[in-house]
Amino acid sequence: MKTKRAYTMNVRAEAVEGTRTRIREALFDLATTRLFTEISLDDVATAAGVSVQTVLRHYGSRAALIESNIEYAIAKVAQERVAPEGDVDTALEVLMDHYELRGDTVLLMLAQEGTDDQVRRLTDSGRAMHREWVASTFAAAVAGRDDLVDLLVVATDVYTWKLLRRDRGLDRSTTEQRIRSLVSALTAQE
Image (cartoon, rainbow, N blue to C red; front, side, top):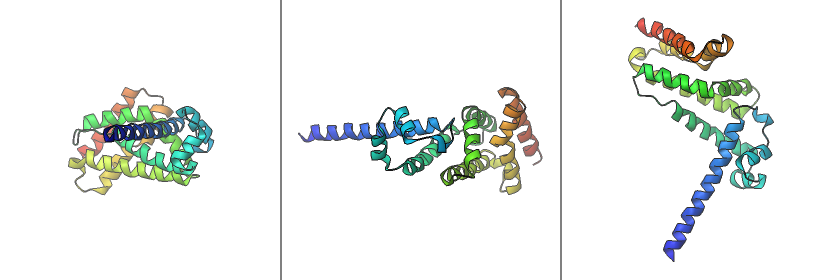
């Protein structure tokens, strides 16, 4: 009997976590194309295939759901940007993959940060994550130089990608080559 109960509890816990994940993914996906202020609990529930009451049962409120999603989004993005430490070529390729997948969403989040405190915490975390990524990726070149970290952050920033890819209309390959040229020019000075 204990074995059956333990199994039942595990299955239930997995089902609960699966529902929570579907709800977080639904909000994450909706936020890729819409302002947070335009996303209702009904929208999230419909996208997750659950009721609004289920969303509220799991998260308590819309604000709590968004807060949980901030942590989820940061972890997801960090995983997408993992690259071998010290391998600058692969790191830049991973970064370009990330911008191709999430760059427009990041820009949408940045557009909202001035009017939404939760989004601001997300974008602040994103900035810190990017700076840490630069410091780690270019550790051999920067050797404790904050000025060089600053310049490499700018060279590899989503706005640099936007200027080349979206504003100039360059293809991915050309955009990546131009960002590599910026990085090479900065790291060659050392």
